[in-house]
Length: 326
Image 1 (cartoon, rainbow, N blue to C red):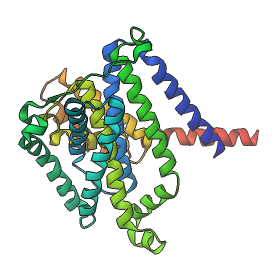
Image 2: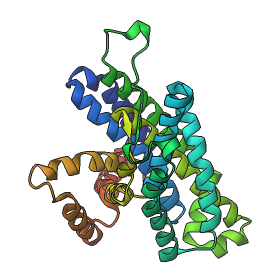
Image 3: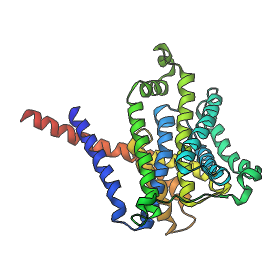
Image 4: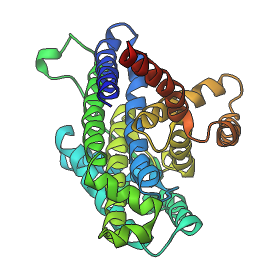
């Protein structure tokens, strides 16, 4: 077990070093694209918590993306709130609304919960258009760009600065989530997912933990939406359609919905798979998502991360046994 922990720490250290040096070796536009990868990974991390760990299905996380994006836009444009304060506020607003949805979700399970969250995703664009004085209606709102602080002006570009800020936030959230899910909270969430009746018999309160999981997951989606809004410099109701929610779920499933590494892989999938497919046919991404989901459910039901672990784990175990014998 200690050897596995060491390997895990080395993997994290190598990834952190790669994130640190990568902008120096790639063009600014590539760093800009990797910013979106980090943002989507944060949003998918919320689904790992809610669906992969707690077993609750959400097809409406694009709505919380939108709430986070509009929160940043409104706070910045109408109130002049800076980035460092608006992103936490976006997380709080999204988290509170997620808690509200979690209370409703207590009465729903399975397909009924999926339909309820799907309805939220469907209703979000129309709701945003309705409050035109606040949200700008169909035209949306502009979001101020994030510039590097004074000492770094001329040293790194705005795209590189946003890249670093995004991945620092992502790293902190992944670390926090890893610690939380590795402790009592994670055990309680998994117990509810596996057998709610047995969890109750051990003193776990399903209502409390299910509601908290929704709020926690929604807060992460709000942070991700805020980062994407700052990166694009604009928010519009048509950005937060059902397609975004489905893309997040697809990325989570393909990456590995019950692993933290799966969230990172899911961020890569959501950002780059549509770009790759559009080069072949502009109308193809939705078709490719559908085919990919079917194939993965048949051949790799655990997602890419679990499949990689299934290959690596026996090799590590064999190596440890060989070292022990020698």
